[in-house]
Amino acid sequence: MSRVHDMGGRFGDGMIVPETEDDPVFHEKWHGRALAITLAAGALGKWNIDISRHGRECLSPVDYASMSYYEKWMAGLAGLLVDTNILSREELEKGRAIGSSNLTAKRMDADKVAGVLASGGPADRPSDVPVFYNVGETVRTRKINGNRHVNGGHTRLPTYVAGAVGRIVMIHGTHILPDSSAHRLGDAAEPLYAVAFSASELWANPEHPKDEVVLDLWQSYLSGAS
Image 1 (cartoon, rainbow, N blue to C red):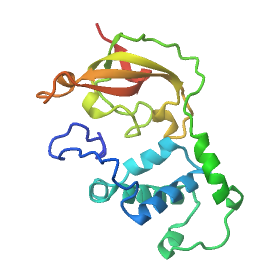
Image 2: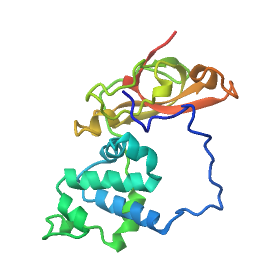
Image 3: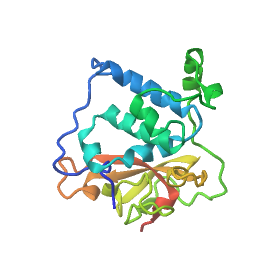
């Protein structure tokens, strides 16, 4: 079953209105603080980016639909902090620490932030999984977009593209498979492709049928299509 966040192309959610270059980076002062706290907590090394994404996806549909973007971030982070025993529910409720933490040495000081952010978080990894497809080749995505490792788990194959036929436009190399790493099952690196899908392949009555959607998809999501 797809989760509430998997809503690409779904009717009834309204148009996407892109922000302009003149819009502020953060619309509320606390948004910047929410981003900073999330990144600083991630630096403690208790989870990876796929685990944190899955944490936000696991919010209840009611909460997910009613929360703003950064409210989701804070709710997902609170769950991760408790799940990894960094904080207790009592500490969250009281808004202050009870006792000391054994993670103090991993605290990211302000003078280290710029360097850590500049180093990025590369997800490319060596892999012995051979590359099956070439640029220009036609492929079909899995008909069902569920996680094959964990029932109900994280996947980067959206529902709206499941079972669709597309064209390989780029090979990115081999990258960590989120379906595995989101559940602490290891990197399971495999080839990652940019795949282009025509709007007419994805939707019954697209406004611009010749438009294309390009998605980065892992090899295990794909099969050959003739």
